[in-house]
Image (tube, rainbow, N blue to C red; front, side, top):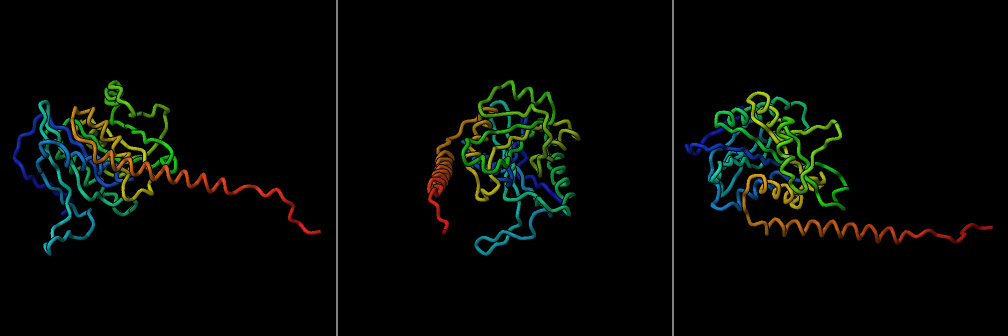
Length: 266
């Protein structure tokens, strides 16, 4: 099968941009883009479905009816342009050296789709593992771009809480979040940006607080408006959990007072 994209709509797209949020560290990208699909008004329409043999070898069952696991692409129209939103429950599995080709094939298929539909920009969304630092700090959003020109254009917008590393450090971005914009840039001259919200890899059920920060930057970049109440409520809950963890750790440390009494026998 490899990766196949089945079009659902024949709509002709207007200056489209592709936003991608698939499962990853802290589910940051998935939560952010899922939220857009659910909360944008009017509701985005389905544009295409993505099937791939790089997905888990299983089927989804509901009401005793089987369905292949798939990702989906939705479109949302604004006055200036159309926005494509790629969402779904899966991407090729990370951490397996035997499926490296699957990651490239999956990303290249999407890049080819973007090129055929005249997409000139791709934004991917992901989580950045900062470990325990996440517990005591508001999550920042770190941006990486496919070209220096793209980086300068975004930096010049001076968006709050969006940071770029100018310290000349080497790092890696794994999975579709890194491969897709890079392949699209190198093969099709499509500019790419990856926005990564700081999180903790142990947050396997998701980090809505980090996703909210990514989402707020996305709204500013594309002049979108959505009601943020639901994700703000989820964000407050996880930040309160972190606050409770910190308080409990402080209590435990305070109880561990040094023993100044001599307890030797003579």
